[in-house]
Image (tube, rainbow, N blue to C red; front, top):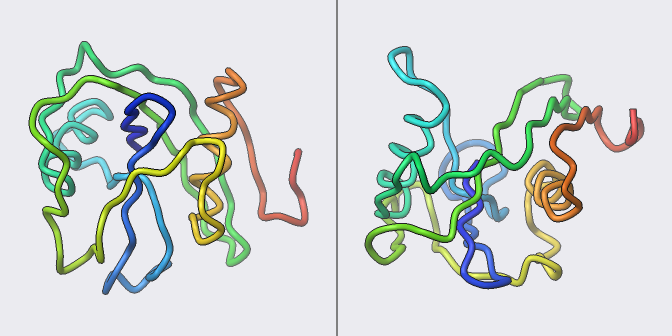
Length: 140
């Protein structure tokens, strides 16, 4: 997960035609490929999704989350933050994204993916790691 910061604003993208959470906002993100580590993956995903170039040295690992959604699916999310990048963010995947926009980190839209809101909230609080079951078990 990439927390691209411009002052107090964060960049979110609206999911489209992905088959999961379409119409919701999320941070630029993706999966780690076989020959990558988490840094390589977020650098690649940032260029593929929003057309920006990142330097490994400018990325800060700010939170790691274990999350189980209401359907029982699990994931480990690595949240990186940076305020340094090359190029101007654009919607580089219009077939999977309806658009990108900046949002104040303390006032994220209601249609932001819950997993993202949790990771951003923990980052703002300075909490490096969390475990979340779906909403009925928050705080576990």
